[in-house]
Image 1 (cartoon, one colour):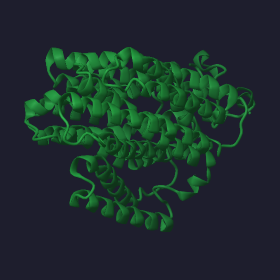
Image 2: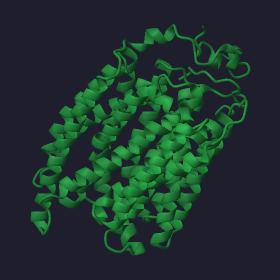
Image 3: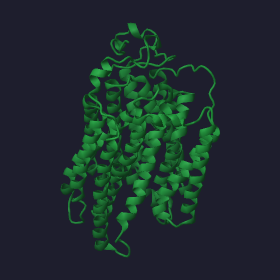
Image 4: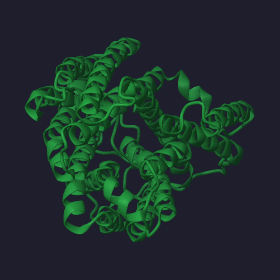
Length: 507
């Protein structure tokens, strides 16, 4: 991976190599993905050890999801205005500190607060990482390959997270699932200072739009809270209803502020870019369908089939490897056929695999019944994962990649929250008042319906994808395209450094 370009004002550290830059960005995504799954299998032990009342241990997951979803737009804009490398390092150090606090937590309140701070760290990290890739690597095959490596690292993190969570919990106790993040996050954050090019010196002064930031962060945060906690507290709960109302008010205020601002947090003109707009919708549906399957698989394995934490982690190994393979296939398909065809292919494969998987959601069926569908669906998911980020990044100016990726990432989190909220209600139909074997069968039956509905959602995503313009293979067109940066924008000495030789197409 030796192909990159740098925007104006960037300078490469001495001896920097594009392969090292990409490796570090991929490792950061590995950390982010690792943290999504590693806590799930430790929840029962966390709940019993810290004395969580009732089912409130789910707040350990919800706190992360709520704050990660709420701060993504601010994280994206901060990357654009304050510096992508700077926010990348800050996010990782925030991850390290909050992970240490989570491992040392001795009460429910402390661990929930630590997870909330981790969520903010994730909201800063994801758009910073994506915008670094989308500005350091020229649009076309180079960026596609970089995003495939990044996506593959994320899939690997999901695999290792589920597996490592089981191993660490059973061997060292639940605090280990937090401590493991600390050295990795610190190492990646400090290495970034030596490997990733400096943030550019920006001409002119730009405001951060604090009123817009406060209103949208508050609006999205309480919206995600309502969606996540609705199934737990009940949709008629004053907390949930109040959160929906407050969210609507805050988001309406945000829209008014942005329409009148001379330097808005989210310039509405970005939505004229069809690729970004369709990419947002696809990301939303992807996470509301593919993205909810791991939760229902975990319920099937642990609550219906009685798998241990370690067995559950091992069961996720095969589908996660399939997703990783799909991310690489997604890059090749996108470069050769365009994002439209790649997305249609990925969702089509996903529909077939998910329908096949649904028949394994049976209380009397074993892992062998579901694994084939898991593999096929995983390949489709991997293809879509790479292609959707390429779609969302296409056609956006380098100086606005952070906020564009923040927008796409926000729809990702909201899509996942809405998908889980809706499908959890559907899955629970028919389980009330049942116990033992009857409850296991009712749970499996409810999840069977849900999995078929997610396949229908993937089919809807195929229709949305048709809104993209037809495109041909990007390999040939990109070869004739100038880089977003001209020769004068390269790192000092890049034109004489063999590591960068041929990495930037000339006009």
